[in-house]
Image (tube, rainbow, N blue to C red; front, side):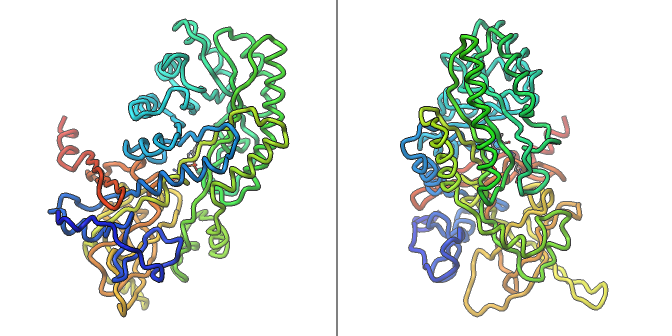
Length: 474
Ligand code: LLP
């Protein structure tokens, strides 16, 4: 690699909006962490093959700092939802800022513990934890992880039995289902009555009785998570207002039974990011089953409240309730990594067709729904831009599609230079991008490249197509 190819360079603020992740050098090259992405692809002797994710570790660390500083003097834990992006360099960056982790499997728990997250900085969510997973959480560290989030009353005697078998006390919290409709995509709303998640608020009394009958279980807190990609604070604050009296009632019930007071109030994650707006007339809203409404509704959703504002709104409720001594937990995933990762792809070819009078123009890229499934699964928008943008180029609207044999392998219509560029960047792909990738159609998993201080600091290569062949041959 040429020595200067990773040198951080000044950003031209006049190119692109200030909030643009894909900042541009004065000549129009896309930058991430001050690094020219196109140059990395060109100069690295082909070692960074597309499709590849690139992440800005410094910006990720800054997100954690920003959330933490919004807590002020309040005792807190930022339990990063590892499912959003479990890459080692990212979890290390979060842990380096004093962040903990929200995990949902034994593998995620083992991973974060290997990456420097303390056992008492981990919460474990999930509706169907196996005995093996419960054992791992109870047996970890000196007294187990911070909290196993019980998502049902039925889980409580199960956890008690495992704790007894291990000769330990299991620390649990109740994940309360508040029965609140979050204004988000149906697939990522979790706090409503029909969701499989959490213990319904009306049944918390029975959950308390279950703990009372479980000598090896200690109730350390209550929590909730109403959904993901929340763009306004209303429903979030509503859920906190519901949760605080539940906390108080559970604490009273425990103390009356001679059990310890509660320690944590876990208000979940869900802080949204700005995915921008689709180009006018791209037909996105018409195509999508439930994309969040009309183009106007999408536009309104793009005015996203920052995580720190969610935290400040939360803290004012906590203060009002006199719970300043309580450790407040949040579980952000997307808002920490989403905007600070991009997926770079090569353009394979274009295709024109005139099935009727209207001309169709497709741009085939080498990234597909197996690399980034969010557009196919949630009709999510990921803006696509050229890596190299030059003044005076003519622009055309292309339907950008991947190589996978599914009609849903379609990233939507995007305005791009015509003739098309060699490489494109799919923005805001840091969260739920690589972690949801698959090898469908015998494809490789994308490479991940981590940037910090204006240079590449590590690269992760997962199963390639040859590994897929070997694994299927058996
Ligand atoms: N805590 C719990 C209990 C969760 O279920 C989740 C996400 C989070 C925290 C983190 O939420 P976040 O801050 O990232 O919004 N694959 C979907 C998102 C699924 C979210 C699942 N639960 C997507 O790509 O939009």
